[in-house]
Length: 289
Image (cartoon, rainbow, N blue to C red):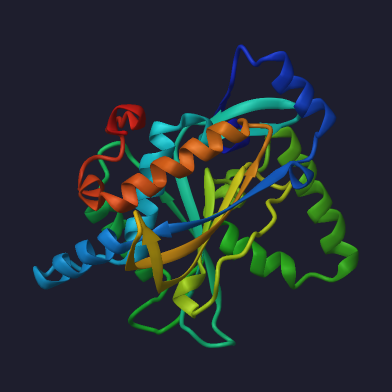
């Protein structure tokens, strides 16, 4: 069994960071919020150009790739706090909830996408497609579930007298880092970051709280992409803008670190050709500026 689903203790934690953890032992009361509009004008042109050449990439593919590359360049985003200690995930894994179909009664599935060092926007696009296609058995039309997706269905149907103590036991195991691997598989709460592309359903970005269960320290939502008029250097222009809501556990890094991470994310979205390169490629934002 892997501790906390696969993680290692962070050494040489500063006194300030440790006291912050002691004062705020719970993740749910330690989250900070960043609201930022991202300029997607160049990304929009990039996607249209690629579609004309036969590449089937989407905004979400670009978002996921840019976030993965940001985490590789800003490793503290892959930290989490558990049992009053600071840990780092062994892998970078981004997660999201996917509806099987767009209707009120459609089932939702938790999706985990591991971000490997040589991945780029094309490789990750294929990973997403393969993962979401695997849910539905094309021969029978049924939904195939495994890991946490399957366990939730079973557990959720139990009566209170059984379900409540079982959930309590799972929460205790989670806190100690000994939750069974079958409950970690496809469990979005065991990921680097949880994503929600609300723009795909015509909704704006929101700030969604992070939870004490699991070890995900960040949650990002993306809203609708809209044309907005902006004035820059005294000139008016129309840009494609998208509002992002970002929640972070403030115990894993300071506000400056989060702000610089958001700057890098905007750089990648404004220079989408960077998304065709391996996500592990280092970017020095100071040199670029």
